[in-house]
Image (cartoon, rainbow, N blue to C red; front, side, top):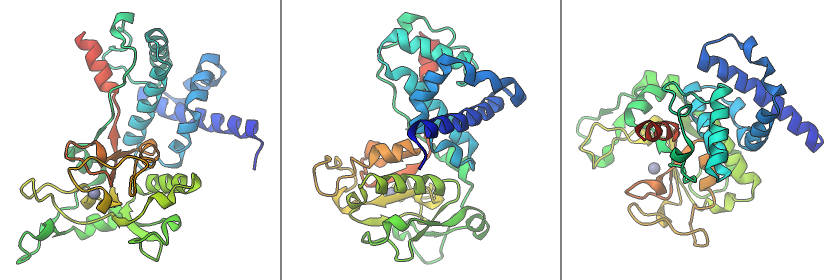
Length: 306
Ligand SMILES: [Zn+2]
């Protein structure tokens, strides 16, 4: 293993390169214009603050749109964490100036101190079905003749399956009740690396035992209660269920010290871009789905409104 300081420096360099790349995409300018960014000490401090959460970013670029949202969300959250409106405003304006946060409408640039709350950041939200179709393709579910409406199970499109579903290796979960002995499950190729990273971190933190039961991931089904046509997030291969029997639909998820609780896993899944079903209005504490939207637009919108 590398000495701590060296590895941090290496991470910063990789992170810096990645950010330059993203910044170039934001601004549609050639990458060469972004090379001096690492010489800025304020910038280095910001990078230092987010380096630990950033580790996942460069691993996976299958879905740049989501990666950008995730990055933007993280940067804004980090900018706001320090607490005071003064610091938050300074950090936000720095991020805009450095081209790291998109501020198309100039809302952040126009922020005055009075506009900045002493931060309770608006939570991230899951993707809409339209955004899921955009990001993960249309599985084109077709109900089987004579199958009735049983559990909304339907036949997915072969071409979509071939293009999007992969067997993802999760060796850490072998032995968890309900998990296949092969160590593999089907998941969307864009979400799979994030799932692997989340499970690896859960394993690394000694929390695998918190996954008491694996209740499934990809299922080609529609949402029954919604009256048909709407795909379950499971139909896209971006969702998984664990500990379902301890987390019944519509009941408050059990707190961390109780049997079957997923509470300690939530921050890990969230840091890898998963949205927790425990935050749904109809609570589902064992459900995690990939894909979140940052609060950037809300912050910008409220600033513009005020
Ligand atoms: Zn689920």
